[in-house]
Image (cartoon, rainbow, N blue to C red; front, side, top):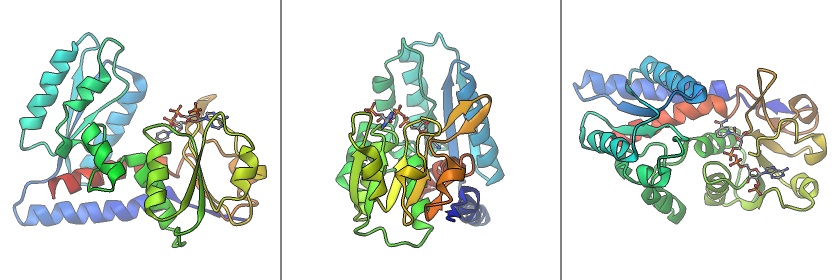
Length: 278
Ligand code: NAP
């Protein structure tokens, strides 16, 4: 029987550090970190996410500015909002909730965020620096994944890691972070052949595909560390890619959904704001 990787507990360790950082700044009379979040339209998912970010940020002592813009706003108007926030020295991190409405060029708009305030790592400047190994904001979900793996105190160096999924926001940056830790990384996707066999040989499996119940105990071995990134709502419940009850009987470590990777991501975002201020 494997062990559960508890994202909530791990997240709390970072939250404690953030609270200490903010309270020390307050004591010294220094400015405290401030996030500005821009939401266009009233997509239910984004609103839930923003409200949660606000609640967590404020509970840790940060300032949080929510900007809600009408769905009919033009790309130019959105860019001018971003440029105002770029100039505002009381704002240290800018979050643009995606996706944007279809009439707005998301690539153009995200490129306008000041790279020093790009806490969600959306700009090409940050992405380029990240893949070149230069100092850059690390995308929040991949940062949560690597920190959960590191929390196990296993030596990642030289291990075989399989990342299933090759999206720009999860799969690719996660593979890069594992590579930075000197893992031997295989990236799989929908055209990969013999996925089960590839996974079975891996020490670390990160599943980021969004197919509930896809990863069963047939994909893992006794040594596997299994990180479930998938989040799909099925019959009103959040489900991961991994059949948790089945996989935990065989693998060494598994993250639950909810309570695994997702429990860390907002905290990683706030950590990025604190680093932006530093
Ligand atoms: P995405 O852009 O849809 O990418 C999914 C990836 O999975 C693609 O690369 C796709 O391959 C691959 N894939 C799909 N079906 C597959 C299969 N049967 N076998 C192997 N690979 C397959 O999704 P994403 O944005 O990366 O997100 C992935 C999941 O993570 C979603 O459930 C999302 O909700 C979740 N997520 C969670 C968090 C969190 O904080 N917990 C954050 C972000 C995302 P192709 O490239 O060949 O199409």
